Length: 391
Image 1: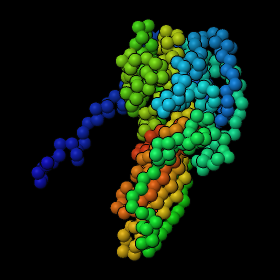
Image 2 (image 1 turned 45 degrees about the horizontal axis):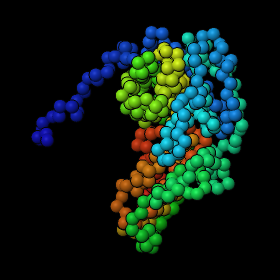
Image 3 (image 1 turned 180 degrees about the vertical axis):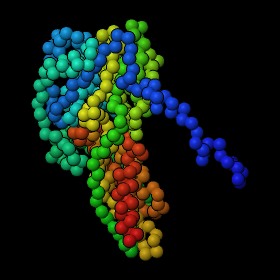
Image 4 (image 1 turned 180 degrees about the horizontal axis):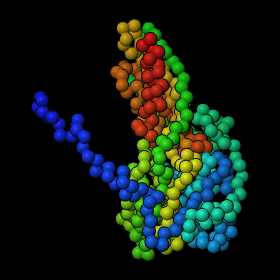
């Protein structure tokens, strides 16, 4: 505790930023600044369509281009597990988001990668890769995705309900969660005024200035070192080790300066690709995204459909609240709908509540955290109803 009149040592002061001098003088090293001896440059081929089966990939012309040292596809990664229990399904989806296997599920989905002696040769090589697609109808809206007549993105995905049971039929609804308190019907009966409104929000990207990057060096002794601009170095280490089936102790991640993230630089995208290219070539490989790839292929926050109903007495007492929240997860399950459902009525003491949350896959990039993931959208809905209720 600080006694009355006594000043804090840090709060209210202007401490010197320990990283300030390096940043303003240009000495700070970001991901794309890294240069290693013998380093190759990688580029990723991305899908021009949002939903299609991959019928074939022919990389022979790219491999024959002078300066190209390696070309990889999903087939070069360790095989996916045969039995798809919950953990294996998550691993399969993580791998497929890094590089598509049998289907592409959003525009910008990675399908192949090249390592070459310079970036321009790598870009030229991408144009020589021949991919044959069988186009499928895209599912681009969370409400459409929940209809039984809508095309299903994953034949293996079944809805996990609030009791932990899974649906018999494949669905775009990955999970349904529910929070209950009291009796909402009785609570609305007590109310003098009830307001119910619907809300829709769209996906919004984090918009960081620095694009994603990853440099990897896989030594002959099996030690893998990764340099990357990340908010979660241990996440990168663990996920990369799991996808490449190597002991986690063999993977070292060196986080570099980060040019913004806001939650969007926690997942992995390029690091396992750079690692595998390095293993094939015996040289360090660096991958960086351009701005288009960042927006098309890395995680925004969820789009949503929400319906919120709240009741109150004339003296201002809140009697009941009900919310239906459906979040877009992107191409693979894992939106922040759980946090959205927990936060929607969190600021208020309400005796009777019912909250239903749905995690829904659509043909858009897999979502990622974005500054209090899930909460801003659901709070926007409930606070908008509160404003009207107060009036």
